[in-house]
Length: 84
Image (tube, rainbow, N blue to C red; front, side):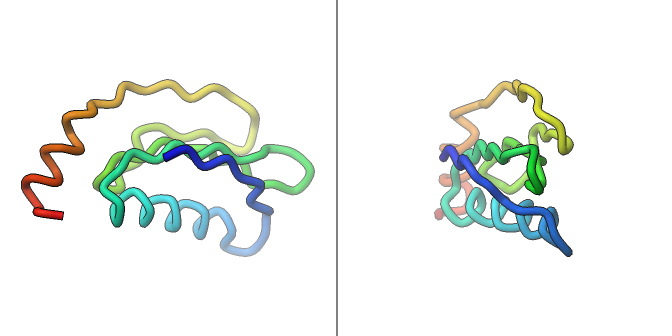
């Protein structure tokens, strides 16, 4: 799932961003690639999350490029093991 976003800065906003993305990955047993804007009051913190909610790679507030390897068979193994 790709999530392009404009998540604003604010109290606990970075924490909410991370929790919601990890929840989407877990509840749907999917990889989530989330990209957030980095300027004009946005939090940045783009990330790639695996189907178990583990953050595979993440960014800080500044613009950057995230690269990671994704094992597509991991999703199949998780679905089989947990019968989701």
